[in-house]
Image (cartoon, rainbow, N blue to C red):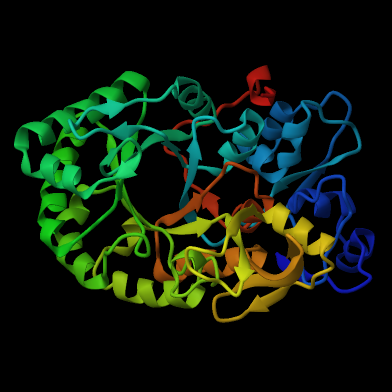
Amino acid sequence: MEIYLVQPEDTIDKIATQYNVSATRLISDNNLGDSEMLVTGQALVILYPSQTYTVSPGDTLETIAQNHNVPLMQLLRNNNYLFERSNIYPGETIVISYNNDLGPINTFGYAADYIDTTILNKTLPFLTYLCISGNQITENADIISIDDEKIIGISKNFGVAPIMLLPSLTIQGLTNFDSTYNIFINEKLSDKLINNITNILNGKGYLGVSITFELLYTSNLILYQNYIKKLSKALKAEGLKLFITISPVNTNITLEDIKTIAPDIEEFLDGITFMDYNRGLNTNPPPGPVTSINNLEAFLTEATSIISEDIINIGSPAIGFDWELPFVPNVSTFAILKYYTAIELANDENSIIKFDKSSQTPYFTYSKSTAGVPMEHIVWFIDARTISSLINLIPKFHLDGTGIWIIMYYFAQIWSIINPQYKIIKVLPEPQSLSAQFFEKK
């Protein structure tokens, strides 16, 4: 695998010829679509399969998988464009395998129940767990449930374990410290919440729950500890998994807090995912990089001295931010961007993509008039270089895997970095044959 930076006057055909790869494959691995738009400074992933196969008349993906003794889902991971069509054609080249020599990892994808089915289908082959958001907890320890049966069923069809993502405690979708405290100190409410969680997991077919930790303070750490222990005991009795998701930026949690809470609860957990290490929205003052590999590496150096590294997952953001400059808190605006929107914007504004080596994140600037007033903008996002630097920390620190926030759009470069280098762990059996539902459009 290589990462190439687009130069002025580059074309897809020119790059493909230079690296002796198929232009079609280059487009697919980077999800460039029908457009051959390239931006100076844009990062492209160049992949080199270890084994390929040329399709013959009468071949199907099932027979190719059987003849090469590989899982069917491996072919869909390696040739993900096939979800755009349900047929293969004589003469086309199918990637059978990559080296996957960096070992096994768990992958978590975070999504809402209304995710587009085509995007979901294309992403599921790369996932170990699908974390589904939308359920909410009330101050009375009830759970406002969502219509998630369909996405749970699709997930299982692909051999991906569905996990209910649950904010630690909210009222009408808003984090509320008082309700958190009241439920945790009230044994009756705490038991009611645990019972409700268990009933929903079993009733809907979830394989576990991921609790997001919010509003952590020294005064309530012991409450979280006790709650996690009780919840774990109830879930383990039902054969269900328990994960937690922590944002060091969005919560008040510090490494000292982790030292306090982690040793007592890690034995009760199946995994911990840390999100948001330097998100621009939370730096003081913004704007700043979406993430920072330097900050993350420093955090992991400390965290792995406290927590068993084999239950730690690192969050991989899939969004960017477009900031007004100069940024004035509570006055200036910003927009959240998909990767492809950022690239399109850079192209439209004739911007050159630059790269911050410290954070390992790309950015570009442009000018725009708002109500006749010229306004400078800076766009921070992530690309293949960011993903590669982040994912390389998994073997370096012997971590469990990564969580992708979010998978509501298909970000090909994430999977083009992970899939050729790692063996994605599966906790459910993968399908051995295809059905029309895999190609269902929404």
